[in-house]
Image 1 (cartoon, rainbow, N blue to C red):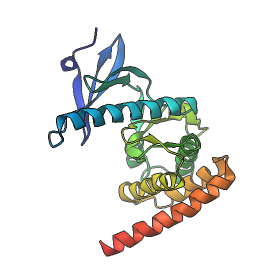
Image 2: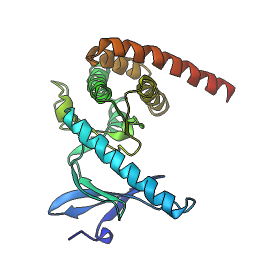
Image 3: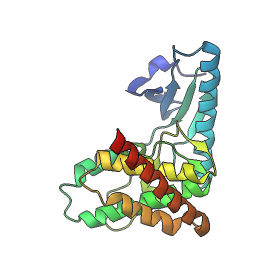
Length: 236
């Protein structure tokens, strides 16, 4: 029997969904509920919501096959517009980790190299499987088991990617370049005190992107996307 969503605690709400925390089948669980959009025709809203839920779950499962840590999916209920998924314990949002540690961390280079190594490998794995995340920000990455990050890092053990709500499967080179550009803009906005972080991530990404010919195309297209973005910023 499904838990009543009223038994779960609302812990976050965005433009597309509400996130609840509670217990399902004895496990700590998050419920992601895509709420109704009143400005849409009801039939269109139902169809689009179901399509987005299916796309999100496909992307999560595909990421897992690529060796990327993501929350486990426990249940998909299309009629209730919900995904029941694993609550990751003993983890911190990467944005919060950086905000707390960048200014006080003595070994800042080691910290940035740790983050860059993790994210560079993570995004390369996503893109090699043609997974476009759509919202690559430090708010959508969790760090876990980080007590000993000074000694070593382990992508599978330390980094968890979340919120595939805008994800899709696409081999298009430009989509991968845009994914990277979204990350760059989010880092410059949220972490302007560490402007070198994206370049470090991008370097690791290129090292670990196994298809070198395609990687060159992505880098070239990224530069085009970046130039278009700068022009838009200048024009306003």
